[in-house]
Length: 304
Image (cartoon, rainbow, N blue to C red; front, side, top):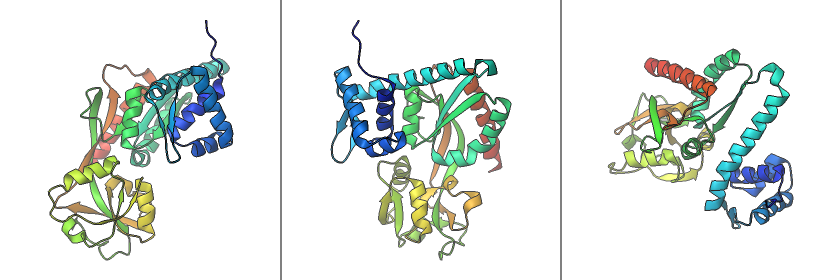
């Protein structure tokens, strides 16, 4: 039997770089230097005899082999961690880990109250939450890295069961002192002269907006692009411009500086859903949290 020369730290380094797509950010997460991190990845690639990453001066991305290896390494590390915790805490009856993935706005609006009840009922179960972009949430569920997800993509994927839970409208985010901030609703025509801030074209949110506005005669002019809605709202708050964002991203308790006015003609909506893999039985604890979220969000949707 051939012995492959690598250790646990090498695998953890590989996962960190794969998740961050950045040696600099992964090194910061692991509290090691970039050269030390690079040496770990080089050692792992040499031991395996394959190239795990394509690296240029501008980007880092997994090779096809690296993507397949990531799935197996995540499963192995999670299994090892659960095994160690199970041995160390056997007397306390630790019962495992629930992993879910969700778009960031879902964390603020749907998780806190449900997680409070879940952890009160099951104090020995640990919950891992991956708050990621819609595509990353879908990928985490597809690969089995997450037991289930909350996302607005996946309904068209034959491997995914999509359970609709909440229909969300897009609003125009602007500073509270903007001239349009007191309007009850706004047509896109009303806003064409505004300086728009938008997520990049690769974003799921941008795809929803571009599809909805395909038939609109005059599109808003985008003066600035940024990767995440949280960054958009920071720029809106600074007065740089306005932005079309999902309504849930305007947090009810934090509306002091930024407000959202519903957009119409056309109204743009997206449907959030709980996503799971077809023909995949979730662990009992995951199924319990899934059901609790489903009931809670359905009640919230009826009140909206």
